[in-house]
Amino acid sequence: MIYTRKLILDVLKPHQPNALELCRGIATAGGDYQVRLLVIEMDEKTETVQLVIKGETIDFEAVQSAIEGLGGSLHSIDEVEVCSETETAETL
Image 1 (cartoon, rainbow, N blue to C red):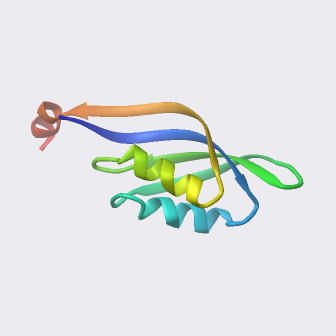
Image 2: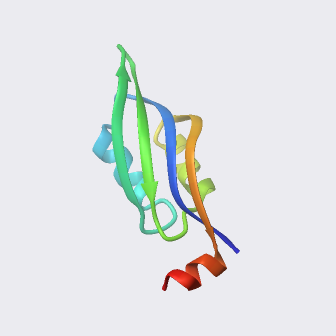
């Protein structure tokens, strides 16, 4: 099995919910995730943000659904880190 450990996403979001609310919503979307948000650009109605999501096994569909549910739009997947079940066993 392949596990997603890290995602870096480019997201467009409205000003509300704020950054903290967006991160909280994503952190609980499908597991126990660490979420970091960096505001890249801001205009009158929206913010372009970079999200760094880390976890043991990230459920991308749940993360994407959480982003959309909070009014955001996924622009791109900028970085991905995955590992196989074999790699996981070797690192333990």
